[in-house]
Amino acid sequence: MFLLNKKSPISIFSEDEIIEEESQKWPWKLSNPYFILLFLCSIYRVYFMCLICSLTLLLAVERYFATIWVASYESKKYKSVSFLLVGTNIVAGFIASMVFHYELLFNLISVVSLGLFLNIVSILLFWTLHSLNKTNMEVCQNRDIQQSYTLSLRFQLNENLKIMKWLQNCILVVTVSNTLLAGFLVVSNHAHLKENYPVLVKYCHSFLNFGIAVYAQVAFCVCALADRNFRQYFLRFEIIRIFLKPFFGRIFPEDFKIKETLSTSEETNVYFSKLSLQWDDTMMKNVKGVVKKRKKFLICF
Image 1 (cartoon, rainbow, N blue to C red):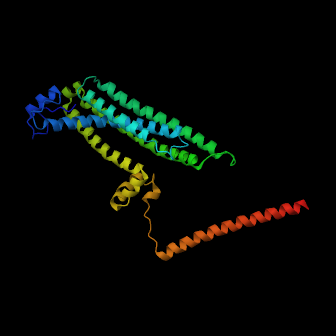
Image 2 (cartoon, rainbow, N blue to C red):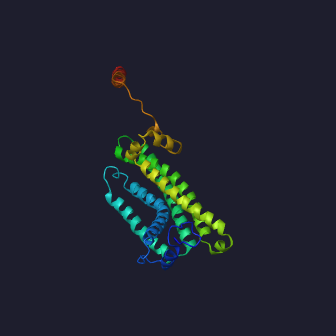
Image 3 (tube, helix red, strand yellow):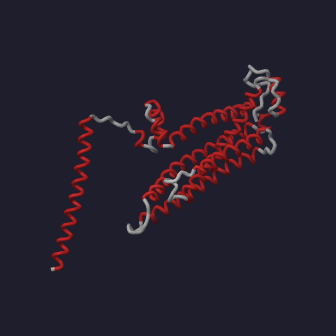
């Protein structure tokens, strides 16, 4: 997939040797010192393309486990789920990268269709899980207070809805981006277009590489902001907060707010005002209880 030709802009390498070795497409042809670098970059490029197609499905599967184990998913750390998803992604991505790189079972249209199909399945699965969690949340809220339910259950349902709402928007953006990159990939590898429209093919190939590079940076930002601890750590820096606020400010408004530092007297006033409100609420409840008892006593007479 990573082939150089005589017109390649990379002129610092020995083109004849690299073309000869890369055309054989086997990693043990290491007579050229730059071949291993090109080989690793090519494999990583294909692996990343496999990753962006399968990542949405892995997130949907993780939310599936969070839905079926909603009562204990927050309290118990299911490390097996993380190992399963990460291990599956690494092994499947590496195998797919080697297969596609060496064109063992390579059909460009089939590969592109498979990647887009995984994105569509992810969207449908997210919508289904979101509806299921929303229904469970409504049932939980309508229960009688005397029936047994835990705060952990309601908290996890609320977290599932919040995370899925955010991830649904991300998956829609990912699907649109994958569709554009798939179009650039098909055009840049089409034999007829290479012969008749070489300039168009070069532009599409450049857009494809540029899109993958931007994708990597955006994926890092999304992964960093998805976890609350990482999000709060990175947003401490003013430059990062200013740069990311137009993109993620509406999603995490509380984290992007500049927290004012209170003086000792202001903190004391806030603390005692909260205590006063709690005391007033307690007194009002006690007064209402006494009034109800008196009314019952008068009714009896």
